[in-house]
Amino acid sequence: MTNSFEKIDILSLSLEELEKEIINIGEPKFRAKQIYSWIIKGKWGEEMKNIPLSLRQKLNEKFIFTLPKIEKKLVSKIDGTIKYLFELYDGEFIESVFMRYEHGNTLCISSQVGCRMGCKFCASTLLGRVRNLFSSEMLGQIIAAEKDTGERVSNVVMMGIGEPLDNYDNTIKFLRLVRDENGLNIGLRHISVSTCGLVDKINKLAKEELPITLSISLHAYDNETRSKIMPINNKYSIEELLSSCQSYFEKTSRRISFEYTLIEGKNDTEEGAVRLASILKKYIHSPCHVNLIPLNEVKETGLGTSKNVNNFKNKLLSLGINATVRRRLGSDINASCGQLRRQAKEERE
Ligand code: SAH
Image 1 (spheres, rainbow, N blue to C red):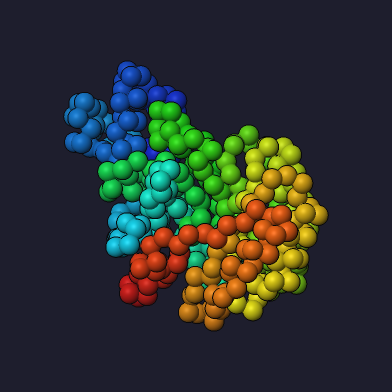
Image 2: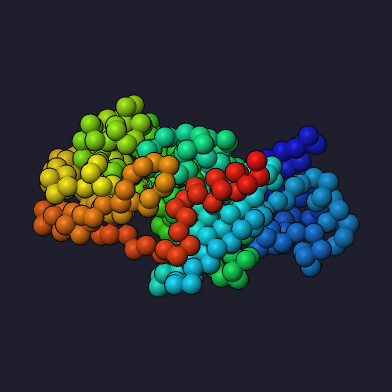
């Protein structure tokens, strides 16, 4: 992020990069570590207690520091899940969801403002894509949520608004920054990147040596069914996608997870489960897991949630496919991803 004065977006820097900048402005290197430890807590200016005023003034001339601002916050009375609507520096909105699990807190973050993938069941794509998020805005969602809750985020899922692999460079930069021991220090094994299946980018990602968990939004068992609900399937067939998943596993040894949203009358029959098991067995020769998600209904799409979730799961299990149904957290604050942003945009207009 830069503005007309070409200030540097400080949250987009690694500690080593910040050290260089600090030396460039004639300050001792150790200041960089001090500053870094403040910014990853979301603190700036006077809040940076051990930074003298003269240096804080220099920092303001050279850098910009912004965090996503909480525009709206919904807290579930059932399980404490928090849904944030964040406003970015340019007035755009994104969403993040903070979930409490036994193994720690998970934050679901957005990777773009809107989305251009056009999946027929999804609220985030209804208005198209406005812009990519900077890596600093991805980190910023975590920092803002930790600052607001006073709790640590130990797991991150890139399953909010946007297609992370359609914003490839910033996503990779984010993954390299978030693992930094001096920074947020979230291990990549605790991060899932979810994609609708950009095969060229999956192949590229396999070479980055980033031990994240890759989640594939599959949602269908053949091309006819998949193309009807996911336009990306017209570019990359389901066979190409599954082959790239198998190569990804061979290169990285990381287990692949498949997401499968069950939509009434579209992809949820027992025969569908049989065909899904069969295509997975044909292409994936490595441990995999199917995460079944009952459709979160979005009014505009006209699609309904499946009543066949358990049958579908049991059929997959009986065929030797590891499958679970995603537990729905925060059901009382509804809002499947993308809905809050659209409401906020409508209210503004
Ligand atoms: N673009 C990425 C990540 C964002 S969506 C991707 O496609 O994977 C995160 C997951 O939620 C995806 O599996 C997506 O298909 C699913 N999803 C989107 N809208 C949904 C809805 N209304 N109900 C259930 N799952 C949905």
